[in-house]
Amino acid sequence: MPQERPTTSAHQSTQPEDDFVSIFVELFGPEKAHLLAPEFAVLDIDGGARFIDFALRAGGKKIAFEIDGPTHYQPPAFDRTKYEDDLLRQNSLIHQGWQVYRWTDHELDQRRE
Image 1 (tube, rainbow, N blue to C red):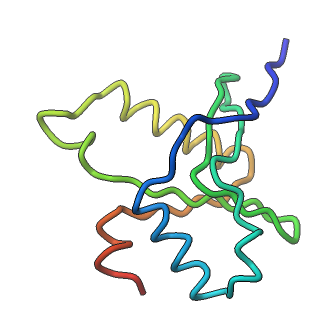
Image 2: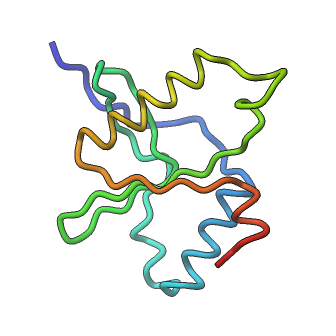
Image 3: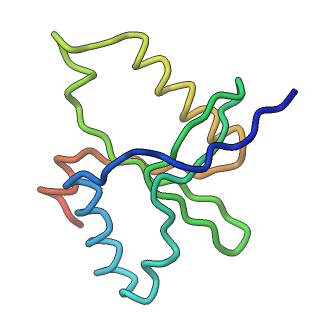
């Protein structure tokens, strides 16, 4: 039996996510900010509840924007299970027709272009 798509997330925005919105508004204008859907709910290929940092659905396209920090991918905090879960999540989005774009928090802060 298919699971229902999750509808809410308890996630609070982070500074890098706020930076992404700021850059988006600089590039496309404040009138386009409403196109971004933060913490957009989806199901992965195993039926698990997931959230896209920012989704943009327009003109038949599905675009996922992800902002990641490197800390949980580096020793000593590296968690193989988390890493593999993140790959499943991204592969699920691609399988479902999403274009996925990822930035690190450092890129948004230091390389805004």
